[in-house]
Image 1: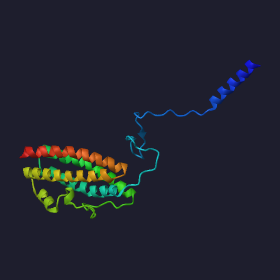
Image 2: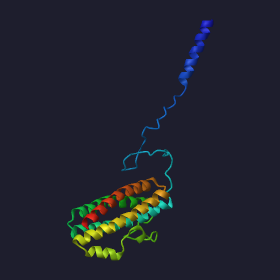
Image 3: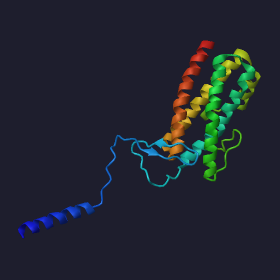
Image 4: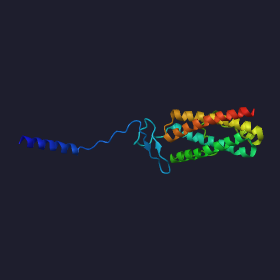
Length: 213
């Protein structure tokens, strides 16, 4: 009887253990977490400390200011770049113009769609909507743009580089403001990419400008 009782108790314990739900294994902190993108977007790796599985963060006013200011800012850069092929044959200047256009046109599209998704008006032309002082963020004045359109050869090269360096420096300032106060993940990533890419271009344009002198 004693042996039979022990057997019954052991069998009951094993059955009870088998009925317990298994807990998922914890994912190590060093394992990358892939976050699926939206329709037409690629997946990305979650950043350290990012909270997943929650609703999207409401964009801050800084995010909207960044997009509304950067769109016309980029558009003026594209206008400057479009002048280069007819006004210079200097290879480095032509490469800068091409690279800037290739980078900034898609960014305009992304920011325009983002603003539209919020029900915000997409700025037209070079209008900053009164939100920013144009010269304070590197925007060329109309007089400077007329001078650039009228110049050719080495004169165009020097003026283009001078204006574009200042233009990029203004973009860095705008990106810094977004990274300081912005909340939207897409706008913050874009600001970081702009800051990194345009910092490199500023250094290269300054080196080219020194060589022209």
